[in-house]
Picture 1 (cartoon, rainbow, N blue to C red):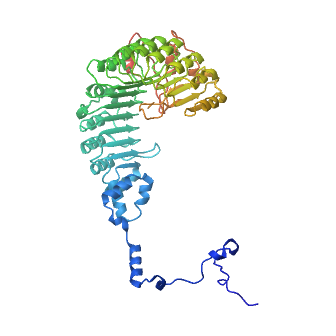
Picture 2: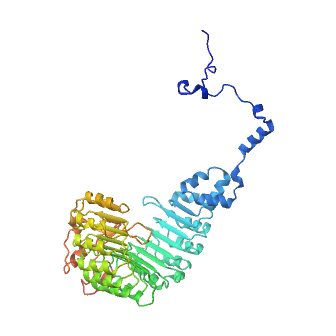
Picture 3: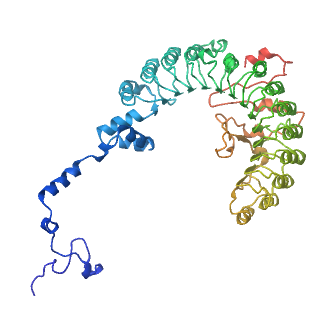
Length: 551
């Protein structure tokens, strides 16, 4: 018995003969070039083509468009392919976000030599690191003179001098946002005096090192005609921006969130002139019905958020409803003070026929006001009812019966049971999504039952056992401002700082319609992560406004 070669058995390395059909096994003979009638010149051409870069035929402009459709990470990987791709990717990148620590200073010239077409820039620095300084910001402003959007986060080393250079060099800037910075009123004025194209301004936690920051006033400067949106958030001396707000002739959006001081007088001053405000957000402010009556003189108002303003009552809501006929989106967080109820809601229902979005938090409406809303607001598409002690199955059944245009519904922390949810099996024919959270009477069985009867309806149920006294609900800062956005995120919990929610002990204080003011003052405490002093409300000293200004 002699040795038999493996090729004679039809064996090929790396394979098993018992898994292979012998008739299909590759022949042991090897094909040659002559079998294909190929010559050496043809093989040489193939080798040359393998070394050729076919992407060289793609113009730089087309290659840039391809890069713009990729994610930031994919673009970075593509830039490592070859030198040409590195150059094209850098020149076509318009958005850039940098970790703005002091260590990046020495790399800024190289960064902005490569990315020389940046129009949207974000500079962020964490609290534990030293940020870039005036010199670095000046260099950036000179290299990126076509900037249209800039965000500064935690850049505490930037002073008034850096802001002056920014405004002087970036005259095309349209959107500017800063948070946790330390420049003062002089820097902000120097910036605004040079930005004639600025449309959106957002200022959060401006920590000026100057002791007389509150005495300095900030005006619109060259941006008086261009500014369309102003957002002030968590400011000690937010009222120094009063001249800026009043002097912005074409202002459409005003958001004042968790800022100290008495805001009624400023709102009255705004109402004293013709304005084109279409969107107003007020959250955790010292504002009363006087301020709401001033807001009611904005005939173009379409979006209004009033969150946790315990001095506001039915009187102010009625004034807004009767005069602002174009209201489309309304969010009210009554903070369980019982000062806003049926009277204000009925006035809203009868006058706001264009209402498409309504969010009621911490308000206790009766079936009368809810029936009025369901009857008169025939265009209502999005409705959220949160933290109400009076909304039960009859009220929910009324909504299911009468709100024909309703598409999205959120019920949270209400006294609703399975019986009320069952009414949506046949009611609200246009309903596409229903969310039920922390309603102790609603079980998972009714959710499955409802899904089976309305297959196209998205049912989101979160049944959690909670104590109603410990529950606190609030809407997010952004809410549901855009029609395409997810219907308002409603959050709950015990948070001190950042979110602005009250603690459990304060939330557990019972509220009454005539005795809620003292509990309101005790609840208005810490606004953000940095320490705020406790706010004492007006009417403690018969309208002593000077004491309010000192808070």
